[in-house]
Length: 365
Ligand SMILES: *Cc1c(COP(=O)(O)O)cnc(C)c1O
Image (spheres, rainbow, N blue to C red):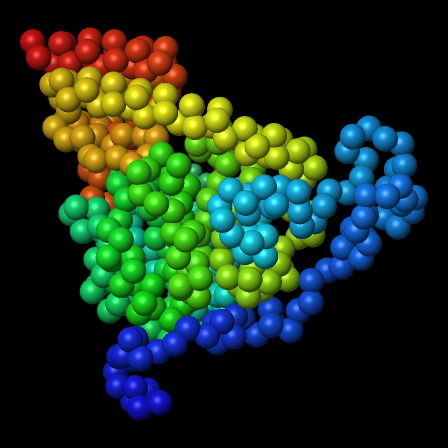
């Protein structure tokens, strides 16, 4: 290819090729074949003596389905995709770790992250010995597309895009994300942990269009199931097959599968809770706007609000004294003197509102 000789390749001319970006050792693997992979019950009564389980029924004496078929069937229908486009993990944190292990060669490859953003991408790059190239968001908290392209080289495997972004709360522009999806020949990972709070559409409908697109979602936020640890990875069947080769066979336990099925089957409850959280968010924003020491409230598409204050550490400690724990984000780039407020229940938010008003009055004097 003529582009090879140039100092920087012309990404528009390059094509995504999954084989080129998968680690050599992973290409050669075949997944561990568990007893539950080799024989799947067809529903008829069978005697299962193949997995050295204790036969006495207690609800969890059997190994869970390593492919979580019942749960995936519901998710596939709700999201308008196929089961072969879904991989589930022990939280999205496990899914993200699997991406590193499938595609990033330690000490050789690199990833790109866009601070201020979710801290786990950096933590995982450290654990997996993969260089983390940080490209700051713009002042409007949007991806700096030209700066990102400058940092991409032949060893850049993953680009993490968190939209809506944590801790800023905003969604990234569709045009910027599309530009990156079209030009980057590695994998674009869009973390949609907060998508259910957003009016923006999920990127799920674009999976067929972009072979290098990976979407992660979670039951930890809008679905109210942080305790069961259920993360979702959506991608082409080819990408999912690669990750399936390296995932621990029973990474999603029986209790999690059961509780997740119950919860995702009850879409109405989830939607009602999300609607309430959005109303409560508006209420909190209204109050923050009147607080004397709050200088800026950033636009949010998530279940939290980032606000700039006069002195984040002082205000954090004052709230703590009143029994309210928020997140001090002052050490994050572009987030000096910011606090992140998660939206709570109406009762919890009223406590916060009372506390903020009291502190605001003291300051005003
Ligand atoms: C909370 C959060 C997650 C959720 O991680 P889980 O491991 O699924 O609980 C993922 N990404 C972002 C950006 C988050 O804020």
